[in-house]
Length: 260
Image (cartoon, rainbow, N blue to C red; front, side, top):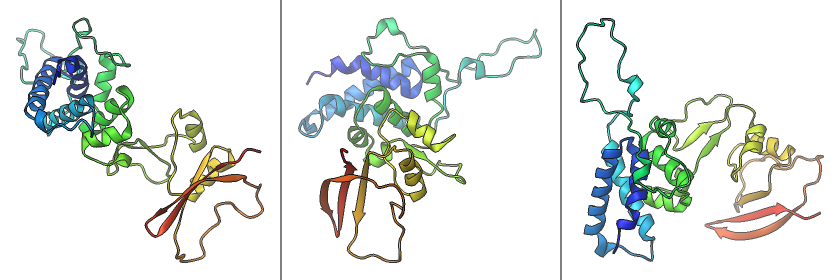
């Protein structure tokens, strides 16, 4: 098993995670060592070599980041001295964000390695940092990232929270409260948006013709009077059934906008 071709991109990944080039090299060396020791257990039918290596590298980085505060930039290492005659006392125990030596490594990745971008990443908690880099920079699928982090697909997909009262989403993985008008945010979003929950949110987007597909989970037992998805007296909505499958005791049906 030849792992060396992946070293450069793994160094770039670990650098984004920990903010130190020299530490990134050490973490990649640890990744390679773990991979070599586990080579007999690697199953190519479950994941590619690259995905498998990134899972190991992610675990190595998360372990290294446990309990560590984010790396400060040099400008944040301390306040200026008020005594110009005081001797300089280097704080050698304080780590700081190092530039990445681009000339030495061909990362082969879409995003560049600008210091400002890596510095912004250091603000995120380690696992959210890993999700951001793996999904948005390295373009792994949500399923691959879930495997690499040992979690579920919904947990790694970015979530936008529309609420008039909620401001703190720290208890929810990879979640951000929408800042501004919901409809405007969805119109600007380049990725597909999956909406769950509030009927008022669905109706707000429905009124702007921003919903392409409805997924309805129907149970055999109905409690209460409920509320209509499409209000009576409104404009007709033309849909066609795309699929229907049994999910436990319920039926999941997908409806898309019909050609008119």
